[in-house]
Image (cartoon, rainbow over all chains, first blue to last red; front, side, top):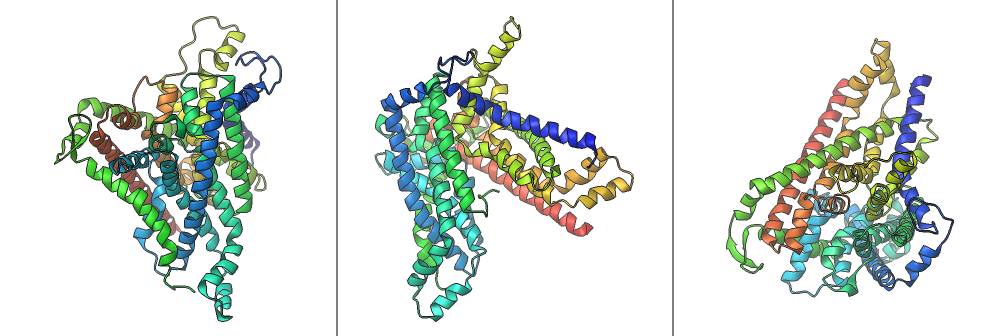
Amino acid sequence: MARTANSRLMLVILAAVFAFLYVPISVLVALSFNDGGLPTAWTGFSVKWYGELFRNADVMSAAFNTLVVAVVSTIFATLFGTLLAIGVEIRRRKGRFLETIIFAPMIIPDIVLAIALLSFFSMLNVTMGLHTVILSHVVFNLAFVCSVVRARLKTFDWSIVEASADLGASTPITMIRIVIPVMMPAIIAGALLAFTLSVDEFIIAFFTAGAGRASITLPMQIFAMIRFGVTPEINALATIVMAVSVIALALSQRLNRGGLPGQ
Amino acid sequence: MKDRRPLYLMAPALAWLTAFMVIPCLLILALAFFRRGLYGGIEYTFTLENLALVFDPLYAGIFLKSAAIAGLSALIAVIVGYAAAFAIAAAPARRQPILLFFAVLPFWSNYLVRTYAWIVLLNREGLITGLAQWLGFDGELPKLLYTESAVVVGLVYNYLPFVILACYAPLSRLNPEIAEASQDLGASAWTTFRRVTVPLTFPGIATGFVFVFVLSIGNFVTPALLGGGQFQMIGNLVYAQFLTANDWPFGAALSMILIAIMMGLLTLQTFASERASGAKREDS
């Protein structure tokens, strides 16, 4: 493997793959700062398209909706997912059925969960809106939080819990004063992951948000806008959305060196 | 504290998953066996018509087409992703984490945005057309966007980082002495790669392939955006049954098939991985 012909080939492969991965998004980011707004002619640097974006009432209300959905579903998912992770890890008997139920939300195709929830809500005659999107997002978010927290719990030193119990602390006190603080980095990492997944999630939101304009989320807004073609405004919006997810996930990754699920 | 009844800790999450995942999924399973009502509602009489309809030539054609597109995307993604993972694993050890990080970074950004990036590149006033004109190409360029090729490119682009990750894991664990031994015994680098490296890292390849195939075959965003609604894939068909055609039982039957394909492939993949690791153990 040390021969130069081979290592040159490896460099060519790396260069080609990284170009393939990064050229499309880089072009997009560059065009969002193009004053003229045309994709083929660079007429100078400008942030005016970002300004347009903030004056676009549809985009702003969609962004607000997304923030509401992401924050509320992240809070529930973090709470439930963390408790679930601790519960599963302190159980001695590992049930295959339980593992399947916990793992399922991460692998079930979005479209299947989306139509299942749509059928479910409409059969119960539930009026759909942001609240149904939140209910639905908690499903996959709690699974992801659980998997991040569980990964960290594998290396958790349970003897400190026994020490706490020996010293007379009750289980809830041990939980709040010992387990949760030690696990905090992983819990925050899981929460950040859940937040990004929720901000980016399109299909389930699209099916469970109901018909009204009032409950459109940002990805739904982006989907509607892209169908009508390329505009410099979408480029700017896409750049912001991309930056938010990358920053949140880089933070999550830093906090939780155990890595993201799937890695 | 170990083994104190942890049920109360798991109860909220399990209740949530039961209410908003298990029950809805069972519901569409049941829905697939009911008749479509006259005005788009559901008539509660048992029927196998919906499942039979899936195998109607019209819809079977869409299934085959979806499978072909998903299969082609998975194949290309595995070839490119394996090459990339191999190159990363061959890089100096201290550079590997950063290379891997940047290979996966795009995977973290919004799916719609990554797909949109290709619309920007491929559309008629897009960069590629502009580049061709700038290079002096006057003729009519073939249509780039709203084609099957555009859909395949979009799917490969979106799922490539996952394949790189899946293939890198076994490649980085591979003992370099095995390849050296093969070459010492007279095998060429290519033969070693083909007969030693690839079989030993097969679980990663299988995981990558299954992942891309499963996500592609049920995808409705990429065909809608990059295919421009020119042709349908299963995902679009399911979408239409629920949001426009109002034939929920048929839509439910279609998604049951989707789940069946997914479970079948995942089982095969687990089986293949177990066999591969079993073979390794026998060798050592």
